[in-house]
Image (cartoon, rainbow, N blue to C red; front, side):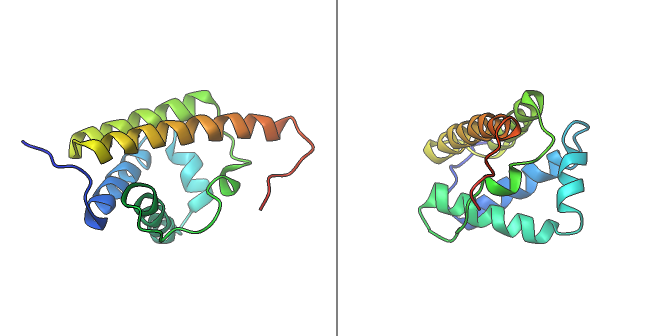
Length: 130
């Protein structure tokens, strides 16, 4: 099968829906996401569509600070490694091209930054900026 690149919002929806489908079934990640998101999955997915649409398609539909909702999650390096593994797998299963590679690069960069910042705030008296 010849895969195309991530070209439009429908591709973003495929990426996000399939990725979070994997997360919701993953033994390491599902409980963390379910505990926080609970019954607000449609809202979360819409926010993720807008985030990736902004990052990958330069269509500025996302506003906000992506880190703050994650600042106090009970996650460790292994959680981020699994997140990256599932994200890369989802991208590679569905897409190929410059935007697909950028999605993986951006996802990995974001996971590394979130991991670093979460560890920082665990040992700091400073609260994350809202």
